[in-house]
Image (cartoon, rainbow, N blue to C red; front, side, top):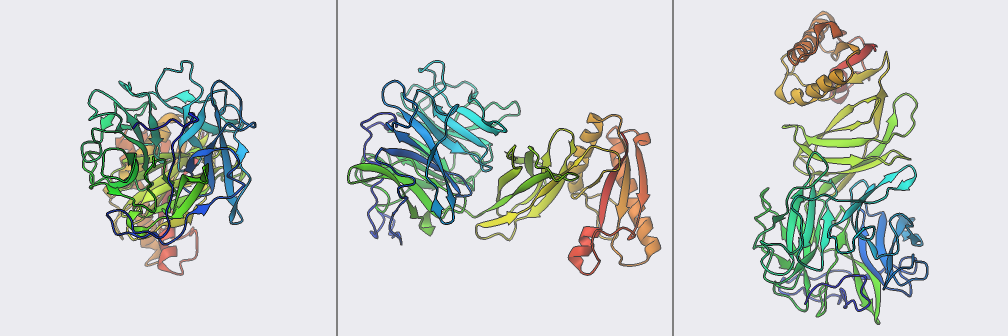
Length: 512
């Protein structure tokens, strides 16, 4: 049996959850009952394809055949959304044009920042053209969706599913191609620098079978994959399975596990979504013949690895006005880009997902501003964590000062450590992009030791930075250096954390 498109009126039963039964073949019991999301979400019309944002605060779904939809040919469905406020869901609203039109409309996935969505079906000039479309939040609302460009893309199957991961780095899809093992297979494409996607790579025989695999959902940890299959051992037409990616080839996966009869039924079970915390699974279930949206507390055996949700707002450091910007996050040790988020153009709010066991640098960047970089070590994160951190971008003006947070030296020495190079190379790029700017490099220490030696150490350190920039082609005439020692602390030197903040290198614009 093939998966059923949501715009067909004969959609089969989705996800009837039996309560407190032992999970099929896994010996796992779900501890809670399924929870109906209530009349603010569900109506007398079918609700399908729920997508929860990683922060768990916004739910998107499609509603079929409602008179409040944009009416069009055949059976139609529109996208609706609801926010979780004061421990309840707000009354769902039609998301409106341009995401809804006269065709079947739905959302495949939403980015970690909530400001980018992947659309299916609507807005195609040719109904037979395969693929997905992308839309981003602007100051005027959602942008007109644009086709996602995938290298060597084709699909022999009449059905297709897509999911863009929250970090905008990977595109998971269920399509049928020359190298498919039978019917729909799961594939991955990788984001490229020109905003296109690589040729789809088959996820291999650990996941794909001679029958259909579809409805993929890769969790926020970037490893845990939930998908529907008609080929793996199950209870009915299709069941939902769980697997872990074991390396970076995207070919090695743990043996898929059936989520059991607390989730799966004898009918078609698919379209499963969870928040970044991995606490709740959202799905569609039949209740007395009516398709409604439910959730259930996810058993720990099926949870993704823990992640951190880093969130906050991006502001102009001078005016405190919110700024639309990109937030780029990288591995501090290698400079490898791990993802890009976008702050909301009206509020400046951003969310990014960071993985446990890694140390990151992250920075906001926008036209007319100097990028400000921070770092964070997640080596000791063992459970889902949320951290608020506001970012302040410095306007490119004479007198403005930027702290170079990820420039490192050995304690008491002035030789640059290698993991400083990524930050300093971005300073090189900034100076190349702004050829008229002259800067002062200022070195600072804490108040430990001799003030005279501290001044010398701080000057030696900025001279090392200057030498690095000169070696990268920056004219020596565009840089001045000054060692301030402990004369200009940011905070009192009352403890080691404060002293660490005071040991720093800054640059100040002295000519523009």
